[in-house]
Image (cartoon, rainbow over all chains, first blue to last red; front, side, top):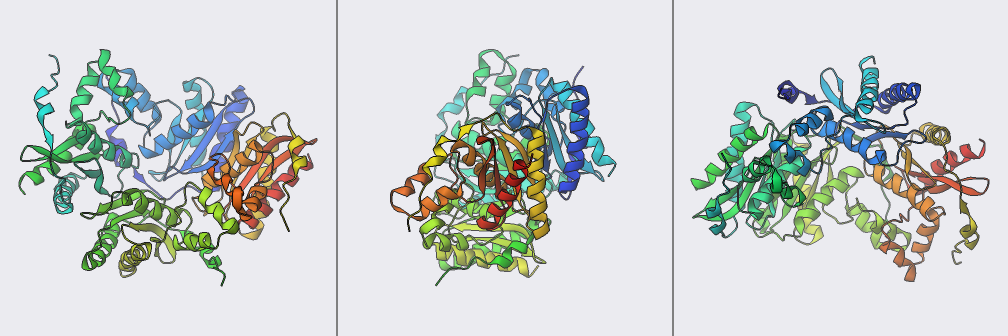
Length: 148
Length: 148
Length: 148
Length: 148
């Protein structure tokens, strides 16, 4: 089965950046989700221009995740797609390996664009456990924004 | 079928750098081609010494393409070949993976040398959509130079 | 006489980013101003989040100005002030020398925020001649935006 | 009058790192202090090993402060002193200018070590207004830790 890069995602536009209050709502939801499961995570929220808005490291989260969480969030905004798309593409091998040459793209699951009215207003990146767990926390954070 | 790296390309020489007027002609053709198709692109033109001559980001182009477009143009001049050659080589795997170790080589389709009288006078790099679409825009830009 | 950092400038807010059409108008005015005087310049325009929108190097502009023009534009947006403010402060010596430690601040005249309705929508940075000439070109570019 | 670098500060030891709960208490106090004054700040808290624990950008804080706030916090822990010490030293000129050669030292007021039982357990860095205002916010944050 071939991974299909969602062509619809190309029409997503950048919108106005999220507010700090938005970012706090995303962070709180993500942190609660992680805490309930005992997952020590680093969670980063960037605005619609890839600039850091809020970053939080939970106690005992692995130090290597500080940079990775931020890079996942930046990637999700810079390319307006979940970072899982790139992880899946890489998994197919062949010329997809070219993704490894890009120094501004982190092909690890756990980064998601944050959307409002169909526009990208920011991104969340999570790192600290297995990447599918990272992704679950990112989704919990992103869901909080949809309710605001 | 094996990808053949065109060894003939090694005899291409560097010529005098393109002028800003040349770069503007390339940019205009590339931008028009992209605009007609509704493709939001970042387009970079470098001279025969890899130095940036002109860079333009269309509205709503993905932010991650600013760096990538420039790196594609630089690669096309630095190695005097279309960047697609490197993407194809990478796709063959094996020792071709060594390309990933080169920090001044971007193995993504969409970068082309700009030629005049058989010599490299600059390069164009395009990023923003699928890489084959990027390559089409780069070709439209390069064609404009051939008519000057 | 003491240099006064304009405290009013702190209340300037970031607005929506300029469009490519805006950036082209700024660039055209700046280029014409420079061309009439025979000044070979590099001119960079960034958006309200410091991301490059348009960069143009005139024929025979010094190569060192590619990076500097961009850094001036980024500084003007990142700190929402003309870069001349920092050049003047540095000139006073003493603890103002601390500015030299900041790796994201270029204290050279020739960078200006671009304003619309009192909000920062981008920045222009010019480099290539003496910094007061750079600043004149930047002002010519910024003026074009005020008429749109 | 000569600035005296407090040599007593050299005997301060590193203690166990602060917790995320500690960092949140520091952040909340600092944010409230800034918000009451209408100062849009970026506030960073690092642990006793200089690693980022919590970073928050208030709405409309200048973008250039994201990096600077973090660097101030790191400096305060890396050298176990308020960053104002280095700003003052720099102001004396002479061989103090050597501080500018250090790429891991940000000599701008607004960074403070966070202490518990006389040991450094983290640091706070604030950027966004004049550096003396930044320092006031940092002190408000540090005070919150003393009450815990």
